[in-house]
Structure formats: structure tokens, C-alpha cells
Amino acid sequence: MPRKSNTIQVKSVEQLKQLAGKTAEFFINFGFVRSTKQIRWNPKDKKFRIHHEIDGSHETLSEEELAKTNIVEAINKGAFFAIEPR
Image 1: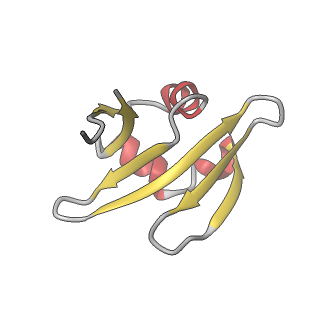
Image 2: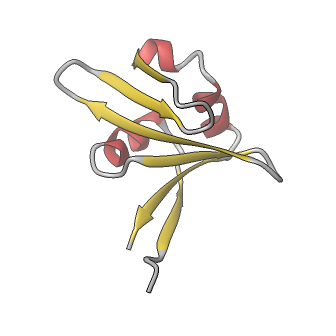
């Protein structure tokens, strides 16, 4: 039987940090299309490690660098979600 999942709207970067410590899969909802990402927050070096599923690319960003991405734009628009396995 496939595992079900919970979808949680991410409402702030602080919430993203909490979720990215234990939940890795996130997506931006563009209406009929979504962009899936694996994100981890490392509190020791205060960096986000992001894997973009669409093209397999990786990047490591500080909170200041993350603020300039479409991730924070999507959070502000209510279009960024976490997927937590049940």
C-alpha cells in the first residue's frame, strides 16, 4: 500500500527552517504545474541545501541568498508547501 502524505503550507522562512530539519520535500504550486525541491536546513552553518528535482541541480544558500529566490516569493504568495510522509 502506498504511503499517504500531508501537505503543509509554509508561511515563513522560520517555519521552513523547522520543517527542513526533518522534512525534505517541498514544492511551489504554479497552478497547473509544480516545482519540487528537496531542502535541508543546517543550523550549524546556517545554510539551506537545495536539490531541484526539475533538473537535478543543487545549491547551498544562506538565509540572505534564499530571500532573493522564488522560494521566498512563493512563501509570501501562499504557494509554497511541504510534503510530510505519514
